[in-house]
Image (cartoon, rainbow, N blue to C red; front, side):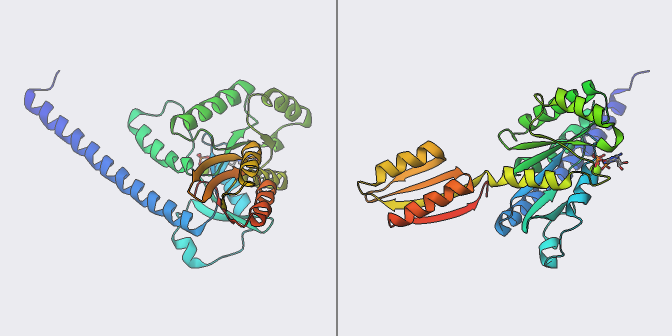
Length: 283
Ligand SMILES: Nc1nc2c(ncn2[C@@H]2O[C@H](COP(=O)(O)OP(=O)(O)OP(=O)(O)O)[C@@H](O)[C@H]2O)c(=O)[nH]1
Ligand SMILES: [Mg+2]
């Protein structure tokens, strides 16, 4: 039995109202997130996001990586969402954010909500893509590629990724080795761990440090002299120059490089009577 014109209208109105309510709620969530992000950028921390399917072990890893963090200023924590915490690696502090897991065949109505939680990922400096290594290989590969595609879709392309192969405690050494061999070429920077049993977390932390330290952004300005051009071409050769502004008597440059090279640039800039500064990437 079909709906009469009147019932159809009522039904249509009710659905429409519901959609409007959801849209409104999502908008508020987005605005709140943006505030958090701005606050974090102000605080000057590099940020790391967890990503992956549901049950991969993201929250377990989130807890394992943040449990040793010394309590810091309470005021700082009130500005962060509960899904973001400070983590410490070799006395350096980073922000780690847990996210909602991917689910296959997400109902259409939930896709928008899901994407809004993922938007957080776009603003991070590093993504930890968590996969459950105890699952069959094809399943792992499929989840890996869907996650990477989704990240690309939301605009997170270009952010470095470490693939965390979790739950190795459930596999024999031989199985682990064989699976890693298969996944090596298909995943980005794979690392074997067990979040639950805290296996290889130190290695993961060092890898995180390495990836983040590979990328610092620095800027300098030097007066234009005959030494400027050879210096500029040297910088261009070894660093990723983002911006070079030539003024009448000086040049201003923003570049990204590893810290060692940035340090060499700093020394040379000082010899050339210029000014040098660094800041974390993406902030
Ligand atoms: N054996 C084993 N189990 C693990 C490991 N890490 C997580 N688990 C278990 O896997 C299940 C899912 O872990 P969660 O950390 O909640 O997974 P999640 O990725 O946060 O899932 P969502 O929040 O649903 O996206 C839990 O029962 C964990 O105890 C691990 O290293 N080894
Ligand atoms: Mg979780």
